[in-house]
Length: 336
Figure 1 (cartoon, helix red, strand yellow):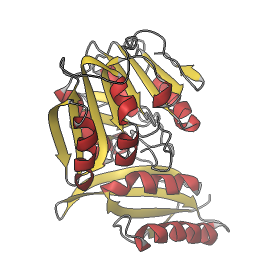
Figure 2 (cartoon, rainbow, N blue to C red):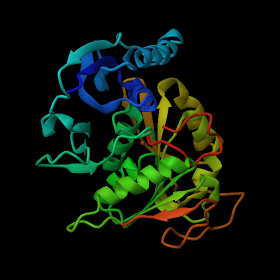
Figure 3 (cartoon, helix red, strand yellow):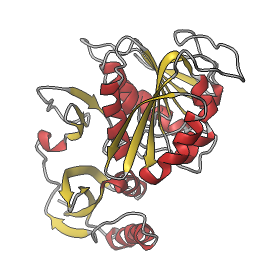
């Protein structure tokens, strides 16, 4: 029997996607989030991963520590030093410990878990390097926004779908149809796989995932969700607004408090009506409505959301969370 080394790191919640990606990039096994907790007024989390204690262990620990050094050296994420513990075997986790909560009403479970919370929405999701573990504040805020503007009975598009978590939540909240798009082909593939995991005999989700950019879409929706970095929200504000028909709602997430004024400036210059502003520590989400008095001086009326969209990618229809800031041609994500 080969012994294993457990690696545990605590960090601010903003680093959850980055640390998860670092572990997966280095080929570590059984990455899971063990808890989320309050630390001096900020949300922190603990993440565990495991390595076989063999001849490669020292080399792989050094590679991990080099990646972690870049995060701390540039003050990108507050975190503890990794704690290494030698185990005689991989621990067998109780199913309930594998559950991660986005909000009180939305839980994420891995496919291998048989545990299901008694109440609320459950999203079954594989852990991948695509943005959308579900624990980043921007994802939490986007989910909370869906309690302000319900997707029930509506056509929805999730721009920068990442793992597909927001698209799946919207569908489980009763959306009539949901489109998820991402310019990252791997993210689109991950989202398609996660949608399939959430199709059951008792619940069929009308979700379509495409490898496409927001600029490829030429139809309009009742609800548009965009959990993207502030720079991409600003860069693509015209394309996002073009997805709205009169009375549609737009959920914007992925911005810090200091970035909100710049985002508000470009969207409110288009005379969108602000419905709500939600915050979680330093992160914020904005909800807008395209009011009847909105005047679009640049484009004609586009088709509505039940018709087939124009796509520059390869649509991947399944049974029916962050974009990276360097992906500036975006439909990407997310979903943080």
